[in-house]
Image (cartoon, rainbow, N blue to C red; front, side):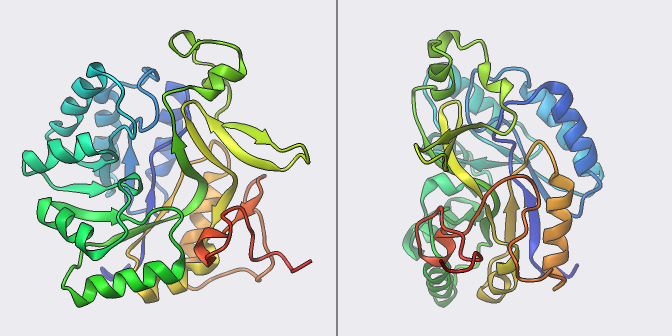
Length: 304
């Protein structure tokens, strides 16, 4: 691909997997047509199967396969222990860090280290993006609820002001919507958060929360709440590229991820399937936010 083509990025695994599943997943991902891989635990500090050294080891292997490796910070910092782990992450000395909260941002900026600004930092205007760029930001992620039209205006404004930090869009996966100090998966199993028995590991793609009409409204993932449906912007890749988006993020799933990556790789080459909505994996699809509508909407379904 040319340097000005849209790149594909694997986001961090949001769910709690076993060490073996992580190893198998990233061993396969080394051969996938993605340019960027973001690693690490961004959701819950109690998920301790993988240490920083483990992520660094996987990162080195992926880097040898030609991938740009980024380490994700936790999105919700709750304790001094979390801060100690964050300092180690920011000071890893090998890979750039994705800052997902203000603690990581402050640490990285104070150290003069380059970083990626995660979507949870909520960058909505050129002024805030300019502040981040001057602090060392190398790439920023659009908020997941930002519409195509709003993002196009923001990117045009950034260009007019001479801000050229690449923009990344969450293009596939359950949308991260909220974080809480409570663990909803543990609560579902009537366990306290500090004695959760790691029940979220039973749900490698999250726990579906359905309405009384059996519609999957949300996906519970420990302290994180995700959308019930998977955002799928394959058919928007051409528009993304035209408006100046540099990176499309694909959020890992436990099954079928190789097919997801292949479909997006084909889409950026202009090889799209028929316009009918096709699920790559067993999951409802949404794209409402992108089109300025309720996030759970699927605009590719026929009206009525």
